[in-house]
Image (cartoon, rainbow, N blue to C red; front, side, top):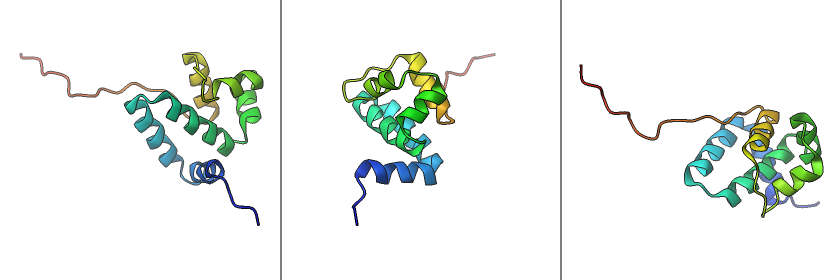
Length: 104
C-alpha cells in the first residue's frame, strides 16, 4: 500500500473541510509568506481536481498555471483571483484595526 504524500493529505483535508482552507489562506495572507501561499494553492489545486482542471475552470493556460504555482511563481492579481474563483473562493479586504471613531 502506497503512503500518501503530504500534499495529498492536505488536499484531502481541504476537500473535507473547506472552512479550514479559507482560514489557512487568510492566515498565510496575513503573514505575507508568498512561498507558503503557493504551496497551499498547489495543494488546494489537487483538492479541486488538479492544476489542469483548475486552469480550465479559471480560463488560464495550464502550463502557465503550473509555473505560477511553482516555488518561484509570482501570480498576478488577476490570475490569483481567477484561481481562487475556480475553487469557489474570492479575495477580500478586511480592516486590521478598528477605525477611529468620529466625534459628532
